[in-house]
Structures are given as C-alpha cells and as structure tokens.
Image (cartoon, rainbow, N blue to C red; front, side):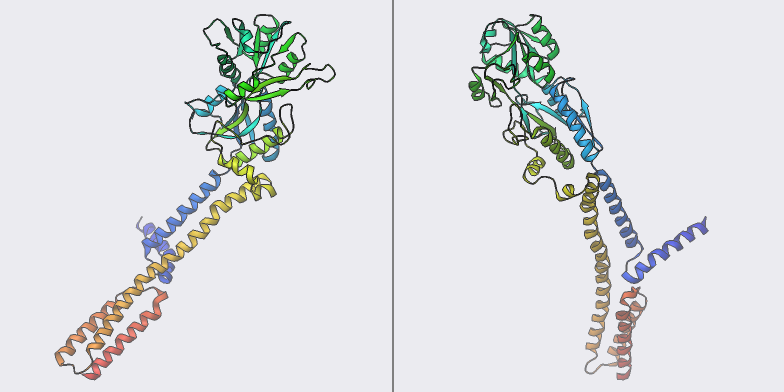
Length: 450
C-alpha cells in the first residue's frame, strides 16, 4: 500500500514539477488550476449539449378534424422537412383549453392555437405570442324561410353554442351577452361539439348553431354553407361589434365567393371574428420559434377568403405580450447561419460559437495570468532582498567601526542564509543567481575594508 501511495506521489510530482519550475506555482495551485480548467471545460460541454434544440415539441390544437388540428398537421410536415423536428399534436376542446394548458406549468405542451378574446385575469406571465395567424369568423347557421340579421331574433330559442373549453362557446356567450342573453335566462344555451350542433340543427332540435374553426372542421362548415335549407346570419351589427369588442374584426364574405356556379352565398355576408394567435411558453428556444414562424409564414402567408397575401403572420394588436424572438424574426428573419446552412449544421456551429469560443477567449488568458500573478510574489521577495542589500551597502559608506562591521556581517549572513534556503522558479534563475553574486560582492567588499 505504501509503495502504491509513493508511486502515486511520484507520478503526480512529475506532472506538476514542470509547472512549478517554469511558472513558479506550488502543488496546490497547480491542482486548483487544472481542476478549475477541467470544471469549466465540463460545464462548456454540458452547455453545448443542453442548448441543442430538442428533437420534438408539442402543440395543443382542437378536436379531431378541426381547422386547428389541420393547420398543426401542416406545421408538422414543414418542421420535419426543414429541420427533422417532430411536432407532437395533442387534441383539445379548443382555444380555452389550449390556453389553460399553456398556463399550466405541469402541462407538457409548448405551443398552441388560441383565438382572441379567450385571455382573462388568471393568465400567467409565462405565455407569449408568436403572432396572429388568420381571422376566424364566427358563423351562425339557422334553418327556415325567415331572414335573421340580428342575434336578438334568437331570444327565447334553443341555441347550440359550442362545447366547454372551446373558443366557439366563449365568443358565442360574449356576442349573446351584448343582446342581453345569458345562461340561466329564457334563451336555452346548449353546450355541444360541432358535430352534435350540426346534427341538432338539421334535425330541428336547435334553432341556431354557432361554429368557428377552433372546433369545427372545414368539411362540416362547407357542408352547411352548400346546404340550401341552411342559412348564415348576416350580422347587421358587425361594425358595432368591432367597435364595442376590442378583439373582434368585421369580416366580409362576398357574394359567390364559395361557389360561383351556384352563387353561394347569394349576397354579401357581414361577419365578425377575432384573430387566431400562435402562443408559446416563454422559455421556448429561439431556434424553435424560428422554425414555427417559418411554418406559419408558409401556411398562412398566402391569400385567403378573409386575408390578403402577406397580411399574416402579423404582430399587430395582441392580448398577450409579443415574444422578443418573434419581433427579431419579423425584422431580420433567421440568422445568417440558419439561412446558409442546414438546420443541424447551423445549430452545431452556433453552439460552438456560443460556448467554446468564449471559453477559449477567457480561459487561456486566465490560465496565463496565474503565473504572472504568482510571479509578482517571487519578484517582490527578490526585491526585498535587494533592498536589504542596498541598505546594508549604504551603511558601509564612510568609516565603519569594528563593532558596526560585525553587525553588518551578521545581517549579510542572515540574508545569504535566507536566499540560499528559498525555492525560486527556474524562470527567475537569472535574477536569483544575480542576487547571490551581489551578496558575494558585498561580502568581499566588507572583508576588504576590514
């Protein structure tokens, strides 16, 4: 056991001895420098892998077949194609449930679609907006021969307003409240999903069905729009709604826009609706935000029934704080590396520049400063002995009595003994031997004068 310990000390001594000889550092300083440098290197390696973008993110959407889920599927193809990142789609009841999940720190979702007007006082500060994506019109369908242009015509009737957790229900309640109709009154409000609402409307179990894209599929809406027995409410109060409710916009559905051959709709329809926002957790990685905004641009950037080309994604007017990364993306787009290189390569180069370049810039000069700082200690010790010799030599000027000579000689011997017993790094060997030469010179001079 002693032989092993002795061998270990010998190996360690061989390792640190060059540092001590050249730079003038003792064993413990050498150990501290090596351990510190190794610790910083380990931290840099950890950060390099920690900052790597995840291989997947999770989005909360809407019910199966809804426009929210359809858009998410388009996003998934684009993210996989551009960066090899998997987008996991989690169905939900709609906008309200999506916002609830994003506010819940225990929830596993990263982003989600939420229509305007859903936010409330309980919204946490951990959710940011990546931009508005498109207008979401509220479509109110009814059957019969009469014409309905105001929601007040539905007072005392039975209405399907959407399922709990959906943006459809929240918006329907907000519009009906403007007409003095609220749950518990003489107007019966039925909570039901899009499919159930349409079925109930066609079977005359309800007088009207409220639908938006957060819970209804495009197929279902088109089925109703092309049904000659089903009509769409033409909101005469569309402008007033937009003035009274900050998140609502007036939307126009032109005559014949859905089917020119059958002239559907047969007149210009005034609608209202909020915008749909793409919300994200505040700590979402900037690289993932860029990927999502790339997908949003590709999916929603073109012209549509209720939007002009290039109108969306937009950062104008939000209920949620806008992500700084989204603002940066809108102003300058993706960074140079991500524009010129494949995603995986750009990510690797970016992390090298972010982690290892500062490490080299700071660590190497820091390690080089250690010998310089410790060298000052050696220099100060040498200077102290030089000052003592200079003081002693100054006292030798003029006539020196035998007693004074003995005192000076004793002091000189003490200096010589201290110098010979000290350990000086090899890098200061010239100054050390110069000091010893100076001691011999003063000693010879003192002997001559004796």
